[in-house]
Image 1 (spheres, rainbow, N blue to C red):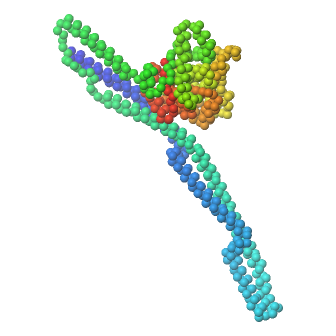
Image 2 (cartoon, one colour):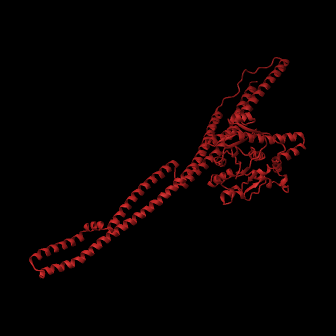
Image 3 (cartoon, one colour):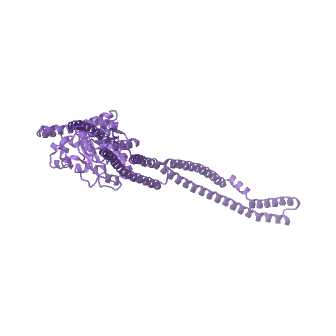
Amino acid sequence: MDQLAQGYLRYSQQERQSNLRQGIQFVNQQITQNQRRVDSLQRELQDFRQKNNFVDPDTQVNRVAQQSGGLEQKRIENEREIAEAQTSYNNLQGRVGAVSALAADAAYQSFLMQLREIDSKIAIESARFQDDNPALDALRDQRRNLLPILRQEARRVLGNKLAESENQLSVLETRRRSISNAEQYIDRQGQRLPVVARLYADLQRELDVATASLNRFLQTRENLQVGAAQKEVPWQLIAPPELPGSPEDLRSRNLMLGGLAGLLLGITAALLADKLDNTLRTAPDLKRHAKLPILGTIPYNPELRQNAIVSVIPRLLQVDRLRESLRSQPKSSYYTAQVFSESFRSLYTNILLLNSNTPIKSITIGSALPGEGKSTVAMHLAQAAAAMGQRVLLVDADLRNPQVTKLLDLPNETGLSDLIQTDLHPEQVIRPVYQSSPSLVGSSAQSQSAATQNLFAVASGQIEVDPTRLLSSLKMRQLVEYFHKVFDLVIYDTPPLLSLADSSLLATHTDGMIVVAALGKTDRASLAETLDSLKTRQIPIWGVVANTGRKD
């Protein structure tokens, strides 16, 4: 009996160690994924710094401001020097400037002094001799010979001064052009810096979120390893084993103990399963953990299939034909389809009531993980809005694994990626949905309801290696503004939010984000990490859609 008791205790310890090892193995996998994500973001941030030749945007802004101030000071000093040089040049061309220049030249003043001495001698000798005296004639000859030399020297001095002044003006003009070119370059840098700073901040926020997630998993692994190293036995022997007194007593006691043990084990198993279950299974559970309003709960429609979605589209848009076709089906199918359709009308109504003062004109649909039904929700929400009279555009912005393009069977020769990279006009890729649906081929124009004419779509286009670069481009922002002006409502279907920046980059240009969560599939940790990432990037989150349907 003692050996049996010890066996149970050893079993409990081994079971505990096994659970801890499984937890450590899972955490190690998450650490590897998060480490790769952190390394990738660090390399991307390093490449971004090297490409833009700075370490920190704030430091670069200060440096550009200092350079701009220094150039402005140089420009003012240059303008002052040009004004002084121009004044000097103008003075040299006038009488006052010429006199000043000649007075400052030593050679000219020497000749002028000789001329004055000769004039003085002539005046003295004229008082002593007659005009025809040879001495006076000699002095007059000297004076006549000296005058041309004096004039030539004056021309030389003035010419040199003018040339020097012209050269100085030329140098100063060249310096002014250089300063102007430098100021234009600094201005371009200053205009470009806000965009670069925003992209840098986005990358830094992603790196911070990824690093925080990695640190949490590292701490969890350390805690699990400490628990695995402990040798404590989770079970405790309440009383030493004893042999029974009689078979009847033993049978009765065993039955009682067995029932009690079964009850305790059942309760323990239920509590343990509930504690270990990290999956969100009900809408109240989702609302409690998301701390956001539930905009709608989408029921499961068993008739909805991947290969049947396209044929459902026109009937969802044509309310009268939908009701007639559903009334001919069994009541259960009619009720299910009607509830499914009305859930999206209710969802769109709730969205309209979110901001009654300013209508919401653009929505980004996202989910934490793939397969949570975001593409199906985006498509049926667009149909519901179109059926209610709105002019709606559905954009497949998932450039990695486009689902809306496949579900609507849209031609994908040109799409969103081609719009961003080429000079195509948006009208060349915007297509009415009913024209893309095989079920409407050959239908008369009279059979199309007004709601059908309201729904348009843009395919994803060719899948690109770097979708993040396309969605963060200036051209994408311009396309968002164009769609916003042309349509009453624009819905963007995007890639999963967890570990990808595509949805967040696009959501910054729209009115906000709606997160789809699949009940029974979405786990609390993934949803919490996704919502924290969106809040860190200051992206408006209108609410959560609880999807009880199967994955798209």
